[in-house]
Image (cartoon, rainbow, N blue to C red; front, side, top):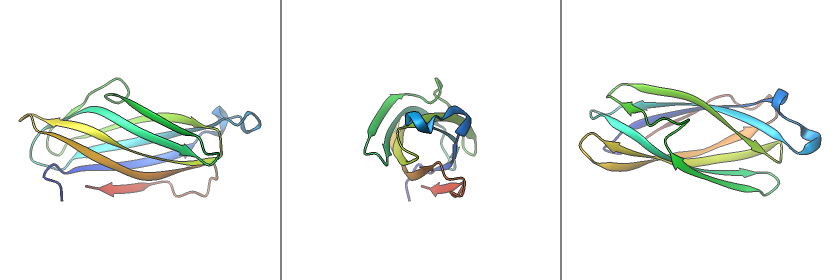
Length: 131
């Protein structure tokens, strides 16, 4: 187990009202809860996502923070946010990582294992990952 335990919970969902299948536009939202389960405060500095869809398209997204913020999480504290992406196919996957720095100056990455984006309403709603 990592010396910097961070719990990531992902809840993806399809947004049919913002999609246009006839134009190959499928819009998804995902709500992520990041919880610091360690003993040292850590700040989420940057994100890196790889988004693949069933049509073979790949998007790579890198940037500072999430939704314009770089939350500092005290031990036991959570940060929850919702973001989204558009695919050119009704299904795809996302995976990536968050880059953190602790209040002691230690730097570490937290992998976000792959989760599925699926326009089919029967897809499982929650994927839970523990690091």
